[in-house]
Length: 444
Image 1: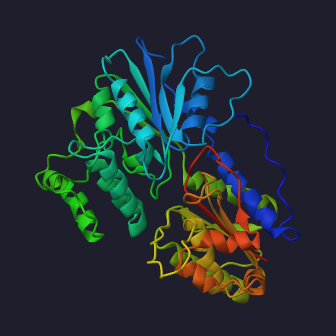
Image 2: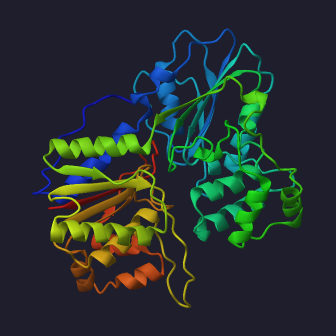
Image 3: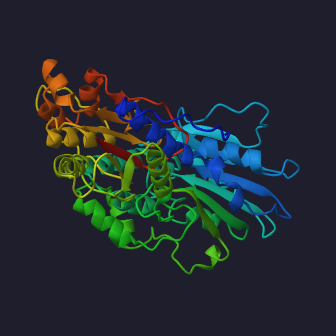
């Protein structure tokens, strides 16, 4: 909640891994909501101010709003965040908003109950009232209100299948919007005729508000037909009643031009690019050239790792396209396609940051002078307790000494097991924000 200056960066030549962790912390700090929320807050209305929200940053966004909103102005509402993601309350900050917890990435009954309560809070709103919506990544799973004819078990099964399919985040959210009574602009429609201001932290490539948390407060240009095509593409089974509802368009979302969105304001208060730029600026103050490739890289995690490895090897060996020493930064949202498990093989554990690091290590082949860190800015890589992983020039050598075969771990999507054995997991705990993947490769 505070603006405490970050600690000085570690010397990149003496402690490359701590230097990379420091850059990650700078990126995370830049995405804390208190940094930039104030400039987007409207004045208190004549009527009520109701706060509705969902996402991994929901707890910290609620606390930032409680600190910034005039103390003599009424404020009430409900925000849902992931289990364990409510930050400690700063001393002296009065609680004015209710924050509850639910499951992510697969929704549960607590998320369903929270979504029902949030939708109920829209009843009776008038044109004199203000609704502040606090939206961040993870809101799709946390704001779960299945479409008519669909139960929570259907929602859980389809969500899990999407997560394991390798579908891009935009594809997953297209499906989620059409199988929901609250996403895809439906929450905004329920708030009408109140004034609606959405404050959002982006965790998606391109920062499209209609994709963040499946866009509960913004119009949706995607269609039922597109959602059905995505489900067919990834061979995800649907109950016949839902298939029929998608085919006949009865689950269609509110579209651009709908008058219920008139006057609605949407403000991005933190983005992946801002966090990458903060890390790059910190690196430059330490005398290390920094190059931000992109904040919207998508694709299979291990393959993106191999692409980054090719670039790092070119810099290390040839000083091209960048001169060393330098750090290469990137963000976005990669995906992991779960491989079929071989009979007798242990179940793999891990997320996209760890999988990226395995692909990177495999392609680097122990290249000298290259260190790397990849972590999710929410502090949780997938469903494990680590934010990500790191690697060094001796990663494969140390793995061999422990009789760890990287290819076996890749086959089982077991990044957690591989890097845990090496002592190379990055464990931060929840960061209370979320601007997607953070990747940094240091070449000395």
